[in-house]
Amino acid sequence: MKLHYKQYGSSGSPIFILHGIFGMLDNWHNIAKELGNSYQVFTIDARNHGKSPHADEMSYQLMAEDVIELADDLGIDKFILLGHSMGGKTALWTAHQFPERISKLIVADIAPKTYQAGHTTYFKALKNIDWSSLLSRKEIDDALVAYEQNMGIRLFLAKNIERNEAGAFELKCNIDAIEKAYPEIIGGLNFNQINNIPTLFLLGENSNYLKEEDKPFIVSYFKNVTYKTVSNAGHWLHADNPKEFLEKLNSFL
Image 1 (cartoon, rainbow, N blue to C red):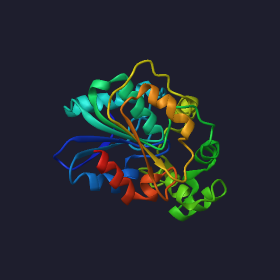
Image 2 (cartoon, one colour):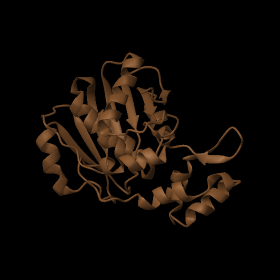
Image 3 (cartoon, rainbow, N blue to C red):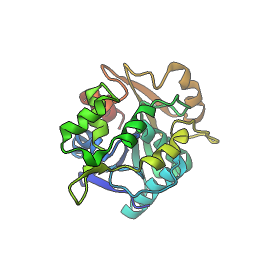
Image 4 (cartoon, rainbow, N blue to C red):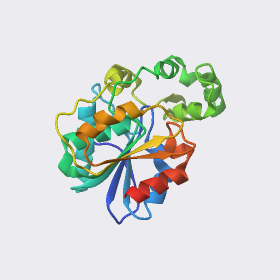
């Protein structure tokens, strides 16, 4: 699958950045712009997200293969891989399946374990609202209030709504395929080999996505691993505290 991507910077080691569920490459614009001063940075829309192609099937194996296909198309043999949430699991699986292609691995606020379903309300919002009947971004936000009180999350979800050629709003992501794949997206990863890639797990201080009891499983397969916590940050740690996120990321790189 030919993934949609955006490049920042033209010299230095290549870095691929993978977003989370319902996200898109634009979520990483500010971080990528900073990193682009020293690296070739590629922010990437996952399949069924953003401007990447839609497909009925969606799994971590397929998303890992999509990443490698993009690297092949760009003529990049080895690259640094950074992923957040669903993108973090994709990054872990890519490193597991194609370790020879990854020079360094950064996983932002996710563990390779099974999570409780936490996006049910967002699926309902994106599927149930008649986007074509809305006339402005304010009306989109007003419609989302019934499903989500947090303005930051509403703005995040609203990025999935765009105008079509006729000028009406419509949903950009392939919500049916994402919902179908959701059990796998929140499911655990089953590794079967040891990995020695230099790996950094970045945790949000106020997030509970990665807990102390998750570390022994990670360490049993990823032997060259470091953990760093970004203060005053939740699950969206790169948006909550971008300065410290970048400091800790750059010190690892």
